[in-house]
Image (cartoon, rainbow, N blue to C red; front, top):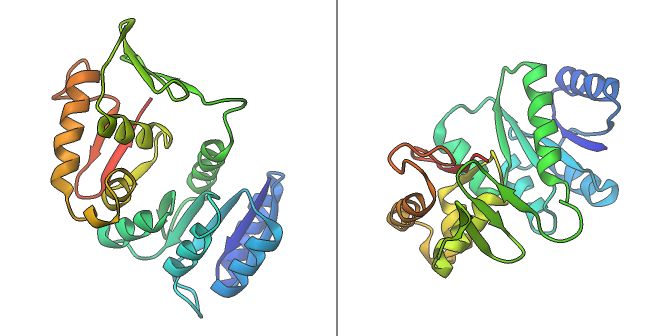
Length: 224
């Protein structure tokens, strides 16, 4: 498993590399954004750990550059704590966001989770099962208590987008662009309406959802 660490602080980059190599990861290290994009294209890592504050180009531009051709999981490391920065990084395509200072055990756990999410589910599309309902991604079918649940195409697309990113925060802008298109990235009321419809159809207690979770002001998360 190959990890690309993008960090311009030498001491932190070295600590990350030592800890990852001790756990049998192959590690490449880049100290700036342009080197990171070049290394990613050549080494094809399975996950990227990315500092946003880089000396040449901003880490947000590195995320966008990677997302132009790759779906590699990206974990952001940043001293930027505001929710706006987190939302922007997630909307740009990051998979997770860890603020500095951080615990190494937490970062490693998030890295393992990102790697699991990035791995293919085997031959064909997976069937995702929760306590309340089952989603068959290949058949585009949802069942609850053994009975098919009828979803509109928009409801299905929204559910599918969340189900394909289990336990991961999916930003509002990303969901709106994915489901409705680039002209709708500010129409957050669409998400509220359709998420309410999905919860009524799928959650045992729609007022207290267990699987379709709202992260206020940021986005939504599917918890299997």
